[in-house]
Image 1: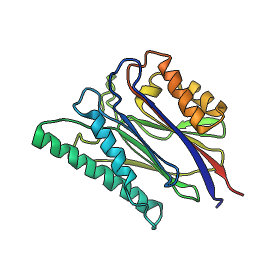
Image 2: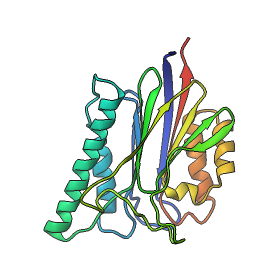
Image 3: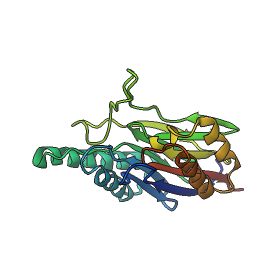
Length: 227
């Protein structure tokens, strides 16, 4: 199995309407972990919830036992934040929460995507854009979240295993991006941008060229085979 190296770029913006950015990002090329957390709009302290989440994920140990142990460590960190937010509701009657989409990868390309809520992960491979994650939203047309960190006592996190290859690109984003930018445009931007950082910035700029009533965030990760 060929070793991989990766580069990434991240961008977040308050958008064209909101006064506060409730998105928070984790970008750690060194640890091979990235995350987008979208604090629940309209809830008190949504920005604090998303920031707490990415801070805890960033402090999760890099387990020496391989990918499964690292996924477990990230899930445990998210569960602790869920418990903390639930305690805040009981103790201070302050409701807050966050979505999460994260990617963790090992040197050999073994990877996993974790998510809760409607922040998304996409994979561009061989000229085809595929959505990795599945939105946790109601199917009655109003797109209400059915799952979020801080929403329920028992946190359920979806995980999808992946084997990354040279030439792959992964996009992690909040709903403020994909509700403004069509997937065909996302595909074209990832394929044509000169770097991961340029792709991330261009996608956010495209979202802001529309109504962009929500915060908007993107992380792009590019993979290259070594040898």
